[in-house]
Length: 92
Image (cartoon, rainbow, N blue to C red; front, side, top):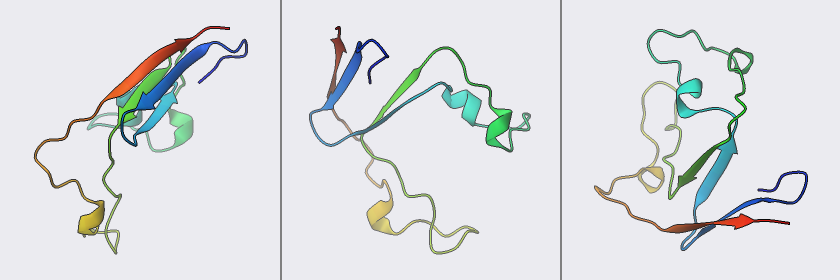
């Protein structure tokens, strides 16, 4: 992830990982019980960038949209997970 000048950070997993860098915090994207965030236009980007590093993500849903779990191969069933990654500065 580099800025317009070529400076930034590199995220390297010691195993395959997923990551994202967004101008939204996790709380911004979760409507919770009281907020009415129903459309992407309702979320206002922040100046800060939030880095999210994940080992795995569970599948979104099963074979229907009303309650079936994802197939077992897409679920996170272990009790504990661990993973490692490096974050390095890149300066140009």
